[in-house]
Amino acid sequence: MLENSSDQNLSRRQWLLKMPLAILGSFAATHTFAQFGNHKSILHHQIDLNSESNIYNVKSFGAKGDGRVLETNAIQAAIDTCFKNGGGTVLIPAGIYLCGSIELKSNLIFHLSSGAVILGSTNANDYHAVDAVPLSGDTTLRDGNWALFYATNAKNLVIEGNGTIDGQGASFHKSENGSSSQNVLWGEKRPHHFLGYHCESIKIKDVSFINCAYHSLRIIQSSRIDIQGVYIHSRVNVNNDGFHFISCKHVAISNSTVLCQDDACAFFGSCEAITVTNSTFSTRWSVFRFGGGKTKNITVSNCLLTKVYGCPIKFQGSPGSSLENASFSNLIFDDVTGPIYIACGFNPKDPNFDVRPGYPDTAKKAEVIVRNISFHNISGTVLSSPGQLPDLIGSVRVYPGEEFSCITLSSADNAIMDNISLTDINLTFGGGGSKEAGERRELPQSGGQYFSMGTMPAYALFVRSVNGLTLNNVKFNFFHDDERPAMIFDQVMDACIENVSLEAHINANSAIRIINCKDMLISSPRLTSSTITFLQVEGSENQNIRITGGDFSKSEIPIDMARGANATMIRRD
Image 1: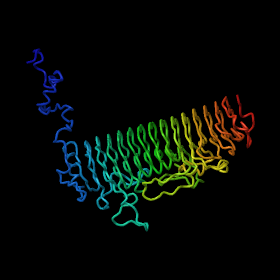
Image 2: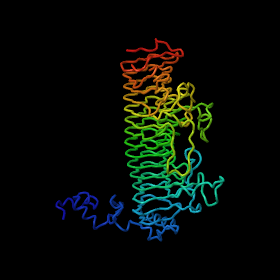
Image 3: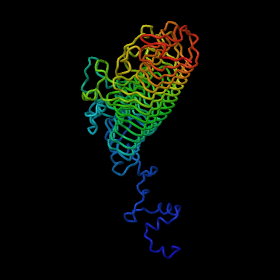
Image 4: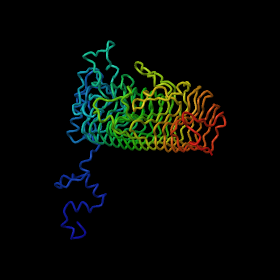
């Protein structure tokens, strides 16, 4: 009985709200809130994952798990039933399950038990296109809409467990004569491991994805994506991307390993609010790849990039695109080429510029913006030429411009590159560059692929047309002799270069070359080897270049003026 008689006329809803939580919990264990008409609690809608009624074992729907019988229908039936009943867990017990295209749905936990292997069929008839995913309009959607697993317009989807999804991607090659058999998918029809489109709240945890025919995890125009402890190993087919996101928001990747052939972690379209941490990457192409849209608010930290025979960090500035507010910190580069390439702008005379189909002519003149990008605490080794990954099926040709690469920050045309910083950088380069390469003056004015620049004229750092540049506590040297300058600054404005240590070859024209730069402070530089000239200043447009302190006593000529430069442009304290 209620203590206060005035409470006797309370409604059931009011009465429940006044009850202590402990009593309410006891009451909820024996009653359902459906008894109280339309007054339903959120608790009534939550899924009890410990209840067998919410677990859908695929073997209860006819799956055998023997690796011989096609299990597509059985697994799909379990998923459909789970979805129809409001959600729950679809359980894949230990075993081998051969299947084709499967649709995952909302409020679903797809659990792969230890010892469970999903084996992608090698029969083209077992797959189909995901018609909800368009292949026209946005050119970043051109890379196929076929998948082993897919989800469209789904919410609250989890793919988890210590099991494996094997795409058997080696079976999706063209034949030796260049044609494909009727039973083999090729080009855009190769299935991705997982294709998500217009989804919200996706979690992928602890699953191994191996041997994909195309991209492993391809997620488009989706938000709230959490990827933890994922292992990807796909080097059996061309375009074996690891993570591939298009116009996604709120993406978190952690504690994962990606060994792939193409882009390991690609962000196309307009991606934002991205974090990548505590992960390992290896690839024949790029690791962190940006381009094609307006991307912002990115942090990458505590990652190992090993055997990256392409470019660890790459932004290819297509017309109308941008990259803003991005931080790359606490990274190890272990035997990489590239190693950082940010280029934007367009020059129609450059045949190497990758103009993607679908861009209108006016877009070629659209502005490209790169702003507020920082690189901090990066160390390791940079090779002079890409190697071949030992587990890669087939070989990949080395483009001429991939050899003797360096950190490149280059804008051209009407592109804007503003506020770039490199701090606490310690890199050793392979060396081998020639004096002739170091004397190059004409480089392509484009935002094309990193190898479109050809052999770089600097062995460590090339910067062109940047406004607002900071270098602090940077050390560059090489394994073998390299006759190119360590650093070249071309048309750079407002630069602060502090505590830089450089190795330079005795035959190099200079350790540093400055071309038509303005408002530049070089503080406490240090030359670690003997060379003829420490700093060469070129061009008639240099203004307000100041050098304070430092030790470049190992050079015969501290400062040399050339090609129209004169002593009034520079001040040495």
